[in-house]
Image 1 (tube, rainbow, N blue to C red):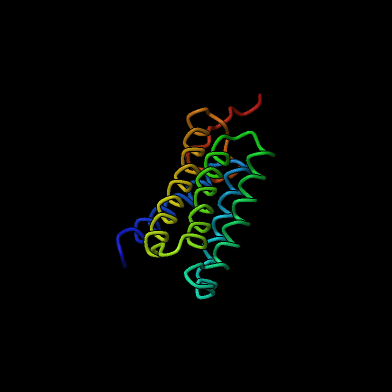
Image 2 (tube, rainbow, N blue to C red):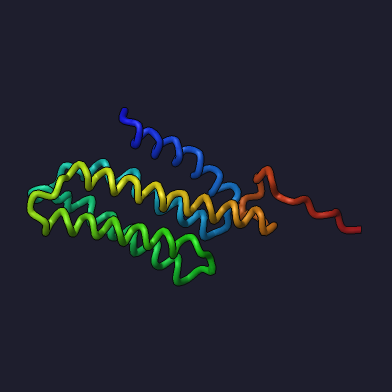
Length: 151
């Protein structure tokens, strides 16, 4: 496996459990969106029109809509920044479709790098939540603060 996909996979395997256990509802929704993206994208990568992977672009567009919805409905900063990275991903798909001679491999690498940056936004949201002392949704979180027993 190439280094970039391996780094992406390792990052996801570390960040997803941290976000699920230490995050709030927004972070859990982000993990669910990412998991859907990760499981569906490899299944449709073979559908192309020229160099454009149109089915993958459609799935990334749905992912962008989910991130924008999270950014508008929840009071967290990371979905907005992740949405910005995802807009750049959509611009790469647009470049692939419109620019003759656009190198598909370069586009895929750029999409992976931007996807990793959006994934690290999710991690940043979890770290911010922990540093702010906000209680995670998960009852099994290791770093959950214990409340004193009522008298």
